[in-house]
Image 1 (cartoon, rainbow, N blue to C red):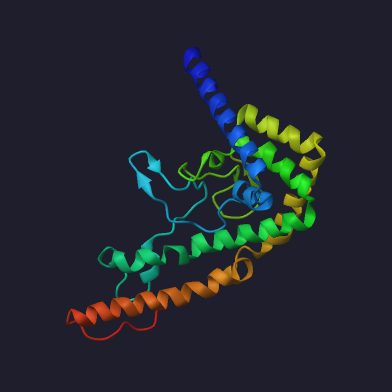
Image 2: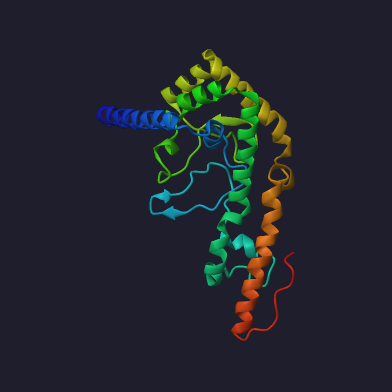
Length: 241
C-alpha cells in the first residue's frame, strides 16, 4: 500500500510539472487570463451532455445533479423519446443546447467581472498559481474538470474545492498570503454573492443562450416534420409545450 501511495505521488508530481510548464508557455504566448480562470473556477451552472466510455465521462467531470441529453429537445412534442431516430438533425445543434451555451455565457460574464476587478498582473499571477492544479492546462483532449464544485448536488453556492489534500492546502495558502490571491478570492466571493440569487433564471444568467435555444428547437422540429412528411407521415408537430 505504501508503494502504491508513493507511485501515486510521483504521478501527481509529474502531472503538476507538465501543467506548470504548459502554463508558463501560455503566459509567454499571451492568453486571456480571465477567461482561463473562468474555465478553472466556475462549475457548471446548468447540466451538460456527458459523453461516456467504459471508463466514465470523457468530456466533462460534473459533480452536481442532472444531465442534459438530446432527448431534451423533444420533450413535450409527438417525437418525445425518439431522439435516436433524429440524431443527424439534433447533433448539429449541440452548441445551442442550453447547458453548454449557458455555462459558456455565464463564464464569459465571470471573466468580464474579473477584468473589472483585478489588474492584468494579478490575473496573470492567479493563472500561473492555479493552472498547475487544473487538468485543462494539459490540452483540450483532457477530460474537463474544474478546480471548484458546488458544495451540494444543487447548482448554486456555496462552493467547495474539487482538489484535495496537499494541493488544496497549497492553493488555500496562496489565496491567503499572496496579494494577487487575496484579490482573486475577494472578487470570486463578491461575484457569487451578487450572482447566486440569479441562478434560477436562464434569462438572467445567460440571456443570449436562453433566446437562442427555442429558435434552435423550432428549427429542429421543422426538420423533423419535413422528414416525416417525406416518409408519408402527415402534419407538422404542434408547438412544443
